[in-house]
Image (cartoon, rainbow, N blue to C red):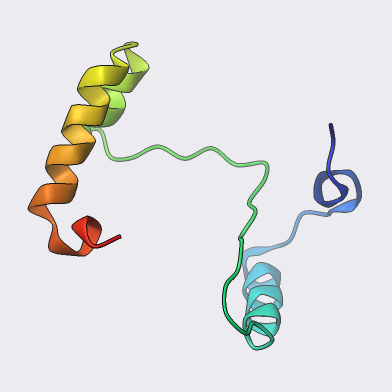
Length: 78
């Protein structure tokens, strides 16, 4: 199923995206969902959990993510 955002959306420059996000942000009352399409994202080469996931070891990736979250108080609270 193709959503309206991907069917009728258009690519924005970095500045255009920032302007549109700022405009929408000013109207938000309590929560938002940010949808990003057409991009790839990878952590730094030193990301052990992502490497474990890439190699198909989902359990090890989860353990590593859990360890990272426990070591970072800001992540543990979410």
